[in-house]
Image 1 (spheres, rainbow, N blue to C red):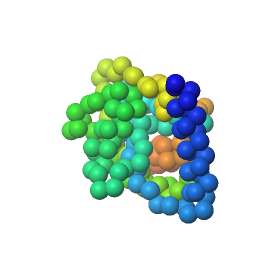
Image 2 (tube, rainbow, N blue to C red; image 1 turned 30 degrees about the vertical axis):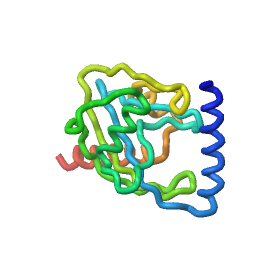
Image 3 (cartoon, rainbow, N blue to C red; image 1 turned 135 degrees about the vertical axis):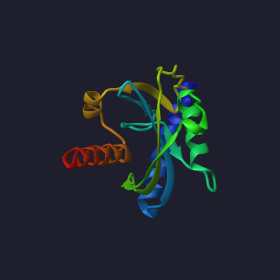
Image 4 (spheres, one colour; image 1 turned 90 degrees about the horizontal axis):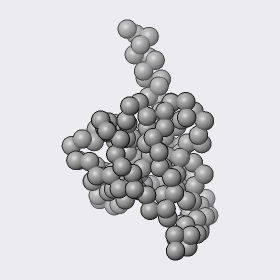
Length: 160
């Protein structure tokens, strides 16, 4: 049954890409960067080759924080308290034939949470250190966020 769901996700992704290529829509998304011991939680979806944080499209008129919590619960079975998510800003990134307005949230956890994936939409989830992040194919908005964050940190240290 899981294989059937994965096939349906891949077909929907393929069809969406064809439609997006023609329309180039603007979409609103959320992403949750969960950090534990300087390692970042990444997931790999059954329909993409890239790794990214838990997240997805934001439903129309829905609160970004609530949507981020929903995606975290759906994708990895983890449900922190809403106040623990720190708003980390928004980026506008062109990728996969869409203009994606991604609201990022960050969460630092003391203990590594138990991850539960459905093996349908999400097929892998793991915490990755900086060296691993450099070797993995990352979702473009995540790469832009991390590069921007790295540039800000080096600017701060140069000014100190």
